[in-house]
Length: 197
Image 1 (cartoon, helix red, strand yellow):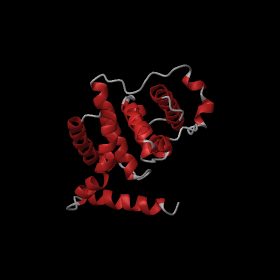
Image 2: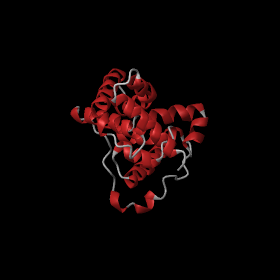
Image 3: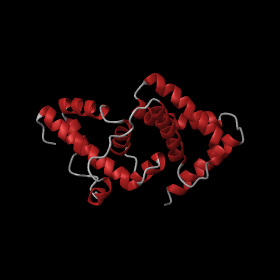
Image 4: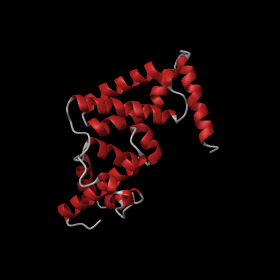
């Protein structure tokens, strides 16, 4: 808890500086969060030219709406939420499916919620170059939401509570998506390479 308070204090000071039009403050905010913004949008959209435009749009929205930031969550989560919503809206306009439809009764999977880790070790699977290449291809083939959730959680190590703030999804929904996505990756890697992961 002691670490969170200074972080939120730094966020508040940066926001106040931007809102006060302090020279260089908004540029500092962009420098600090452009990697996060790029990563979220790129994982959703996968088109570099679209990603560039959407990142600019996201920071334009951040600038326009920063007065609405209340400090209830980390600024990183708030900016991530803006980036996610910009990318999601872009995909919806293009009628690109954001998520695979659920198989079976999604709400009946309460046991899934407690088992985000199902024994499938992404890092171990990445240790072998051939398996890593296959895994990368399978991750890229995932629908935008599953791809983004998986990479935020497993590769960027963003906690589920922060992913929930970014995406607006319930934590249980995120856990369910992660569980199903990992199962899908495991099946596809097994079918593709005969590898038991």
